[in-house]
Length: 208
Image (cartoon, rainbow, N blue to C red; front, side):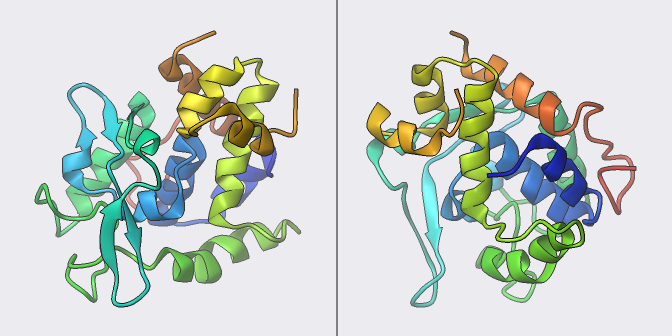
């Protein structure tokens, strides 16, 4: 689990794409496969929601599957800062069809998503390691979301729905600290991770 301050430190050492990946995962608490599976058709910029419907499995050539459980297939709110950053990212991308991955593999010409395990090893872990923060993984951000929501006083049912767990017993395993809508909960998360919001006008970095 990371503190909001540690997340912000790591973000300062990343380029735009990797900042967006971490900020997105640190705001949604998505599983790695769900983050990889995200396509532009899943990003509803008008209603400001993410449609979490699939997960991507990189093994055996890679393929899309339904989410881990039926309860995982839910919508999550899209904070205005995330919307602005994603639209900036889309403006820079060569792959913007509805079926294209938000984070595509350029080598595979968006036929597959970016290899998030490789990004973690080559970009994200080294960024955190510069500050002595070790052991960061994609699931770290999911745990961080659950713990931060608990520390901010969110009800367990809100946390369960936000993380899309099937029951509270699973949710409790994520919480190391101790009722509002999920959109309000996300507002708090974004404020904790990046109080000044994203700055997508700079094409190379989200944070000054």
